[in-house]
Image (cartoon, rainbow, N blue to C red; front, side, top):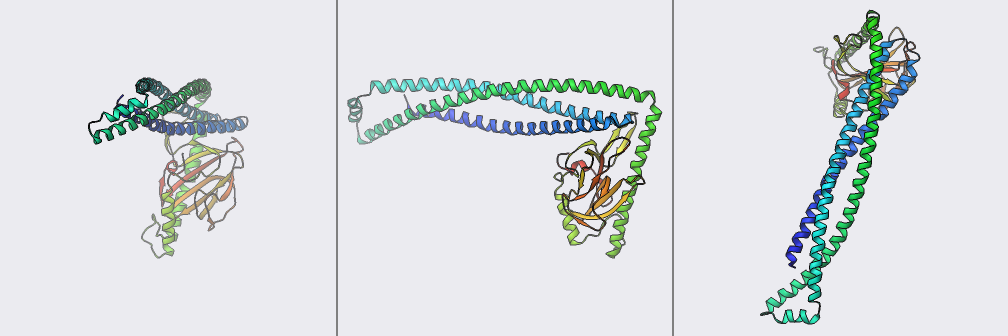
Length: 410
């Protein structure tokens, strides 16, 4: 048996194992990412269920219930999508493992055959006399030296192949265990997916029943939506004016009257703004527990799907008496309240603003410096609908930004 052939076989198997390990590592990273997404969505659904259960008995506004059901359906669709991705990934891993198991078995068979041939050859030349004659028959000292090296290499590779057989056997056993575990995990995901699909169909049925009620008295519910939209638009106008006035006042103090849309920043304010911008996508949520029920941008009206409306911020449903916190360090620019007593807090972060509308009480005052996570108030719960919702917006100077791109994993 040629030691060079043994070495080639050993190296080939080592390369295969390294490729398998690399592919396994990448698949594991993707698997962890999907599992984290699945858990987040499951937690969000649990929170939605809790909020719906708490609010449904109180509300007289079916529009509110439809919006909650719509949100729940969207999240469940996302959950199903993630679980499908998990199932597909497991299917791919299972198929790859079947292929790997076949490759390992083939290589193990070759290793064992090579090793057996080496043992037979060693047995035939096992006597010290045979080895001595092999050396003494050398035609030169150099040839004798090479033969000594050959016998040493032969012995070393025989030992390595014996070790390789043991190692590959263990790897094959572990791969088989992983294969069995993956099959069980896939089966559990399929069962869970089927359950969520069934729940989704029930939610859709309930949604259709509610929409049927809405369509019977379309004008009445359209009036409710219109009134709510008008209230939201009025809050937006107040916030816009407050920011413009704050910029104008600040610039006037700084002796800069040329702009009413852009802050004249001090070096300190510039540093805060830069730091705020650098954390885009990483900022904490304004409440510790909540679910986004309305995103930024255009959306279809619940009562009339042909009508699109604009949301200038994000709306987060949360628990009753939930503390509201600053998402970043800054200065309280203004606090105001609607005639119903619902409060709004504006915080300036250099040239950026964050606004928090939907507070029952406020624990800060205008001019206060606040730090990230500092509590600024307690959530307001609508007595008629039972809803506890925070509207959150982000500005750069007077320009509205999409808050979803600024908060972590929104």
